[in-house]
Length: 248
Image (cartoon, rainbow, N blue to C red):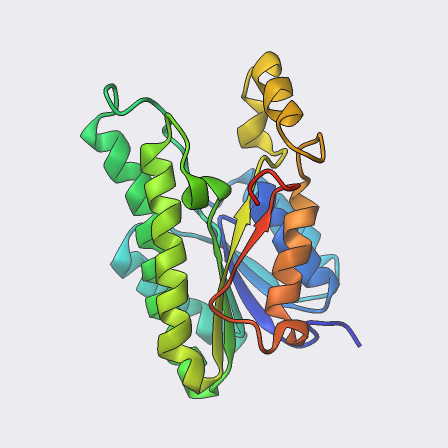
C-alpha cells in the first residue's frame, strides 16, 4: 500500500524546484496532484505529463497565488475536478533580496504577497473542504531564515517567519476537526533559484553547513511526504528544519 494512495494534494508553485519534487514524490506514493504556477507554460505541461505517467490524476492550473479571488476560483475548480482535498502544500515563493536601505516598497510588498498572503489565500480556500471531510494536512514552506533571519533578506525572512506563526495558529484552530498544520524550514537547497548564486558565495555557504553540502529538493520532499501521510498523524503545529544542521 502506497502512503498516499487515493488522496488528493494541491501543491502551489509545483512546476519546478522543491514544489515539483514534492509533487513527483506524492504521485509516486499514489497521490493525485493538482499543482499551480503563475503560468501554464511548457514547464508546467512537462511536469503535468510526468505526473500522469506515474499513474495518477494530475493537472496544472495557472494561478496568481497572491490574488485572493483568483485563489478561491482555482480551489473551487480543483475540488470539482478531483472531488476533494486531502493535502495542501503552500510552496509558492519568490525572493527580491537586498539590504533594507536599498529595498523598495514594491520589493517588500511583492515578497510578502507571494510568500505569505498566498498561504492565507490557499488555506482559507481549502479549509472548507477539509472541514467537511474532518481531515486534512496543511504543509507550509517556511525557511531557516524565517527562524533565524538573514542580512539582505528582511522581506523574505519576514514572510517566512509569518508563515510559522500562521502555521501554529491554524494547527490550534483546526486541530479539533482532524486537520493538521505544519511547516518545513529548508536551509540551502540546490535549486534553480540557488544556482544563480555566484560559485564562490555558494562554496562559502556550503562550508558553513555542518554536513558540508547543500540539500536536494528530494530531501525536502521526503519530509513533506511524512507530514502528508498518516505516519505523522499526531504531528501538528511543528516546524521541521531541513538544513543539514545549519540552524539547530
